[in-house]
Image (cartoon, rainbow, N blue to C red; front, side, top):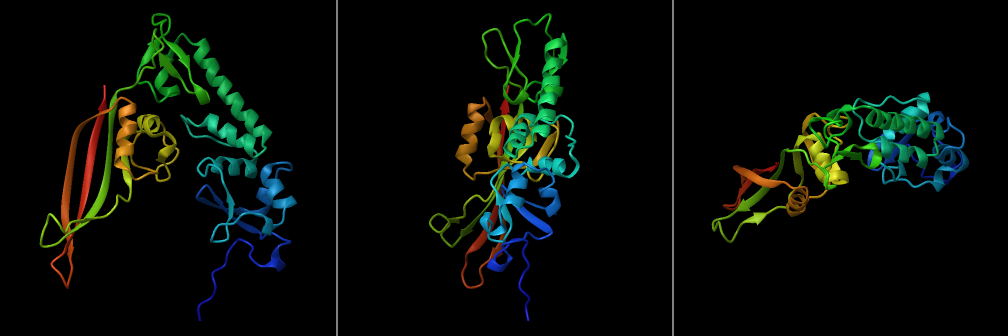
Length: 292
């Protein structure tokens, strides 16, 4: 006899007064498992309000009974680390300080917000006080070292503590590089190749290239879940887009100054239908873009 699957959520009215010891959270689609005391460890925080003032049945749950929080699922790991230890260790070349600071304010964690503000201020001080600066370390948007005493037409600015170099006309200097996008597709061919072709939709558009370039072009539409916390100067082939329209990806690349320089595609017959002559083919296609 099959046993019912257990859930960390609360579905019955008699259990609405208490939370379980182990809590499962769905934060923006990312699943986290933690202990109940961790979530109420900082009085006055938003998580403390959710899990101590409210009862379980008043909180939103997903279809698996996990408590749902509609925030950035990737940055929440640092919020949870702070709830556990009252400190947080960020990876080197962490480019999301501004966004994490916003999450700290949302979750009502003033000490974490102060720590992040101090980190951003220290980074700004390095930019303002140094006459020679390695821009690659501070920002993924530039791949060179500039001497500000000789290049006085360069200005430093940018949101979320980013470093953006501009020329004398105010135009932002863009870094050259390649980005490759690829997708796998499948289609069925019958006896009449032209009329019987049945194409399936694109399931996922993958992105390969330098992380800083990929983030610059695709921004929040880039899914980093398979390769998180990677420094911006490194390369990846594991990112993919949150949308599945190739034309949308092409538009974003064109807006960022990229143009297509190459493309290729391969196809393989993977199966044949037993009752008909239809053949199922799979294909992989790549488009290579470059910006000077």
